[in-house]
Amino acid sequence: MKEFLEGFLDRLETKTEPNDGEYLSDDGLLYCEKCHTPVQCRKMFLGKMRTLPCICKCKQEEMRREKEEAEAREQMIQIQRMKSTGIQERHLLDWRFDTAQETDTIRWAKKYVAEWRKVKAENLGLLLWGDVGTGKSFVAACIANALLEQMVPVLMTNFSKILNQMGAMYTEERYQYIASLNHYSLLIIDDLGIERSTEYAKEQVYAVIDERYKANLPLIITTNLTINEIRNPENVADARIYSRVLEMCTPVHVGGADRRQAVSRDKQELVKSVLFSGKGGGNER
Image (cartoon, rainbow, N blue to C red; front, side, top):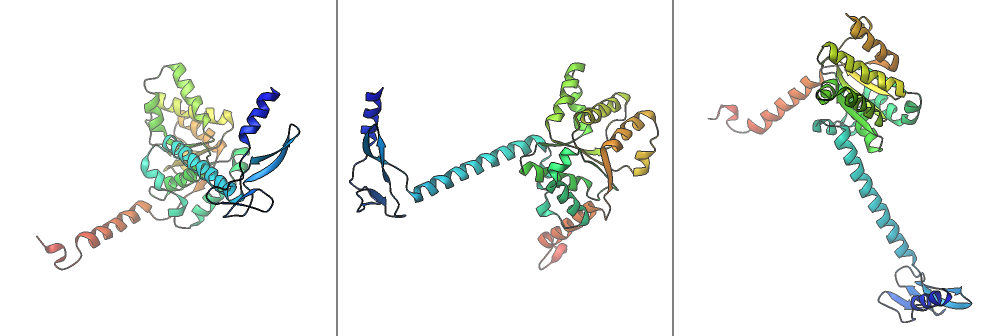
């Protein structure tokens, strides 16, 4: 073993002839011409002083940068992979805080993300309710994207999709599927109330919410239902669902003008400027 190690060290010892970018210093060691730090060092091994290769400072810095860049690329790939499974509708990927107008709603949504550790530890869910087009789904998607970019597992979906996926499953498969939703640290259910209102559908909706409740994990729900409709449901099945939702999620009213109408007006103006501007306007044939 000793002979093997000595042979290895003998082969590892470097010569004193400089390569390109190196020079021989007064101490008899080779140095880097760029950072002027040694690329050789003397170490005592097996009773013999040996001249061995080492890494100069600029090479160490280069290796550090390459490692950080590789880690950043890997993290980006992982985030994109998480987004592809966590946000299944592609247009939601563009709904982010950096594209949002700064409003009170956006400010508290940013705080929800900033305080995520406490939010998760305390199981702080939200029920975002309000009229159609006020931006409930937009706010929820901003939260989802921001957390995913921090590599927090998030799933944003709706009960119509969940019910469609469960449609061909046997009972045990449904249980496993519902339980699998708890792999996500945050579950966002968009548009509660638009799913099929059959007895089976309501049973599954309750099962998903109740499983989340038992797992003590946060849930965000958006709905066009009024808070009065949620607090005073028309039937027992809805009462069961909404009672559990209110137990888990703090109601937050998202008000304001219809965001979809504003987007539509902006697009109309863009069409006019692109297609009907210039000489002749829209009367040309």
